[in-house]
Length: 476
Length: 159
Image 1 (cartoon, helix red, strand yellow):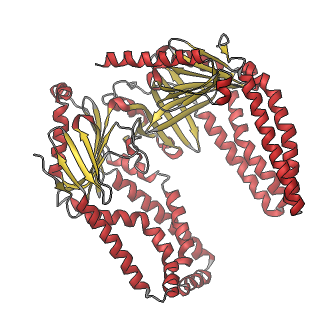
Image 2 (image 1 turned 90 degrees about the horizontal axis):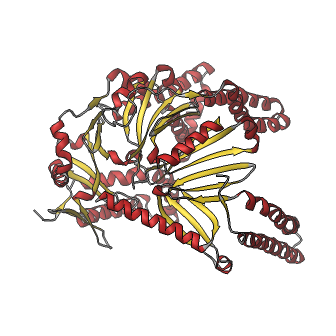
Image 3 (image 1 turned 180 degrees about the vertical axis):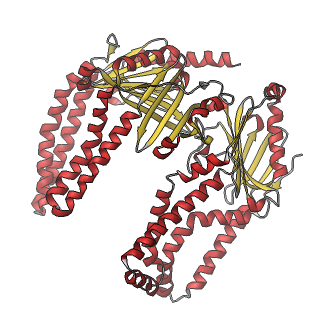
């Protein structure tokens, strides 16, 4: 079968949705400007809006009409471009990963988005089929696995393919303990700030009047409600994102499935996984929950970071994490590794470093801005705690073929398990003042996505840093 | 890596030229400001004049004082298995890059480097890049050949 196929016509709606997603904020901000332009050229503003809508629609339809693809016997060919015609040929056996994305409203129509990535040197995925019938997606999947059948056959015989599904109680805890509410509150604050510019003045005046008319108690209640709504929203966002999260493994790749409104299916080849990270914010640390993700080499950049850091387990009990993970990646240790910690007298160094900046900020504030400047002293205990947290969470462990490092910063603890052969380069730093106390910093560089991921552990004993350095040059 | 190699002596000539460029740039700023002052008597140009004069004197002096320090503590070592770089005394840094991780080696030489028969070498891994200030062309080419050879061998194993 080698005939040109178009995307499903509903893709026009998808493209319009994407356009709106990018431009909705600039458009809202532009409305007052548009109004004055219309006045300037004595033109009804609605006509101007109508012309803009027609132009956008026209381009979207043209985009749809000029985009087609062919499922050949050996490769997938994509034709695109309105003015400059582009033809992309993707041989099936060169495909590295395929991501399926399906919004719930496309489920009854059996339509989904396919993102196809190869190992080529381009920054964007080689093929995006924005909306195709699931049958077509399955056909491409079959062509791809058909060509690599020899490789996968053995695993099918083995039959014992590992599988993991998130547990509802843990997902609830995870969503509740997310710090996602902070950016959400910032966004809400930003929007309320912009209210004045977007809506007519009479509206915002009315609003201000109502607010100033309220008692202090009512204002506090309003603030609390604001935060609660933020927490609820972030809770629901996370809940729907990781709804029914599943992880499964074949011989050569890991696949995750998740999502309530938009189901996402992503596969990553095992051999591109550079390291595995275990992350916890301070609340989850208390609840003994951790998030497991991969660091993968990939060509893809930009908003979709999923390909370079695939979540393997959104949330799992600390004690279960490693035993649950080894069936998926056999090189991981099967038990929680025991880390060597910093000597207690070293903790002071972290605290000192964390205090330097707040002290520099606080002194002039107190001097020049008399009564209120004293408030900046509140920074000091906070910085002290940050430094203490970083020192308390520093740890390391060296195995025969892998290095395990842990650090803490901004109330987030990160543990990374790194096979020695995946470290791109390694540096040991020591200042002249650290010589006396025989300490050094260790920095490990890994490939993440198309760039670098750097893990630095500070104030290790120099002998440990040297051991790791020699271990690194010997395993490679 | 205390037994590492120092860079070729000739690299100092290039660093001295760095001092010269800095001197010329600062001098240009000073002269420009002086000329500008003849037309517009603005405080800003007084500032830039003094900045230029100070830069022309202090900048090259600092570089000249630092050259022996840079030279003394920059070492490199290329073995069969890895490239090691070391620099600094006050802030000492030691980096290891296994040959197997190196993706490509870039050799570059501007007019000054060509005159001094030196090559600037940049070693690129899949995620980081490391620069050796200057090497003898033979050493640089040997490093390049070594990496090409290793890549060839890796390809043979893969098939």
